[in-house]
Every structure is written in C-alpha cells, then in structure tokens.
Image 1: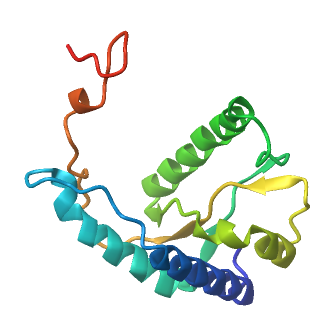
Image 2: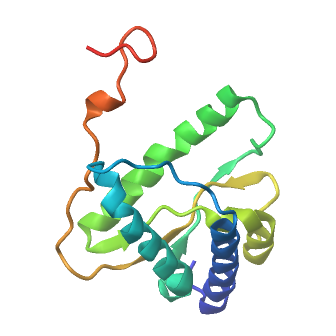
Image 3: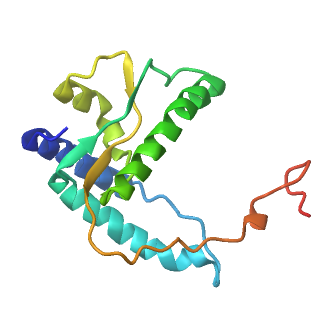
Length: 163
C-alpha cells in the first residue's frame, strides 16, 4: 500500500496501539548483569518509539494476510496457519534487503485489525498477520544482535536437560 492518507491513518492507529502497549506496564524479565540483552533493551525501546512516531513516513506498507480467521482455532490450527505464512514473509524481507530496502516485522496495528481491514477493504475472512513498513535504509553498520549462547535454550530429551 502506497496511499499517503491510508499510511497516515494506519500510522495513527499504530501509534495509538504503541501507547496502549507502553501503558500496560508489562514487567520485562529482570536481566542479570552480563546478559547481552540487558544493554539492548533501551535501544529496542528507542527504536520502537521512533517507528511509532514515523511509521506513516515509510513509502510502502505491506500487510501480509492469510485466508481464514484463526483467533478461535486450537493451537495446532493457529501454528499451522502462521507456519504457512511466516517463511514467505521472511523471504520477502530478505529479498527486500538484497535490493537495498529495509523492513521491520511489526504487529501493533493488529490491536485495530478491524479498522485497518475496513480502511483497506480487506474481507472479513482474512487474517492480517503483520505490518511491514518498507523504505530504503541508510547506513551499512548492521550487525547481529548480541544473544545468549544457544545452549541456554536447548534441552535434550526432557525440558531442562542440558548436555
């Protein structure tokens, strides 16, 4: 979607959703000293705030949809539907990047999914799964996020069983 008025309306809904999310006062997990995610938390908050203020400026918004309503489906049904669309959207994001375009997987507009559907004429039988703002990126200093070692999360044969 490239229509400036529609991007602005979605940006306004996204900003409203972001504020609602911030006001939930969710307690993030207490990250210990030395946990690489601790230092990144403030950068993530700054980045999310920046996006909420400027989402409408991205010249293209892509809203991947999947046919069917899954909010009342059992977990296996939800997982199957999302499992069918996530790889294709991730591939799209990689293809964009290879062409000098950046995108971000966002979902806060889904708080207002019905309003966005009405704005864009998305039929009721489709589920929106994300919102990708797309634009040319600036800078080239991309680097992997600092993460805990994989061994922290992997279990063998039983939950919590480490090798």
